[in-house]
Length: 171
Image (cartoon, rainbow, N blue to C red; front, side, top):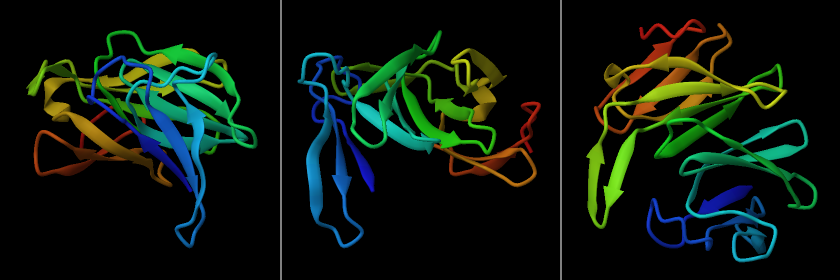
């Protein structure tokens, strides 16, 4: 298992976040498998993780970082335009990745929704496309792909789980 560790403020660009590898029985295989404090690795406050092919994707404030699944070696980053609080990630059968932007502004201990919530897709070419953008997405957090091609989304801003069609329609 791979576990993201914010290790500080939830939106602080402090370079001390890390990802751990954990065995199914709970043993820690590598506490800092990928470590933002190591030169060449960027991790601030990683949250959602997903695996597409042999790559681990990590949502980190406004950027998704990619790591080689076998070694933890950084494989690049994808800046998500307009993001302030990336959250969930899910891999698609196509090898693409979808993610949620909860659209939060964090100042000290105050967390304020901006209303600029969106769900996005990272193509295999690492190009970013917005699937849906609306305050009615209610600070999307967790996301998973459905067999229908749509997505199941859990929110932070409302007690709701909804389906998002491949075209971005909330159901």
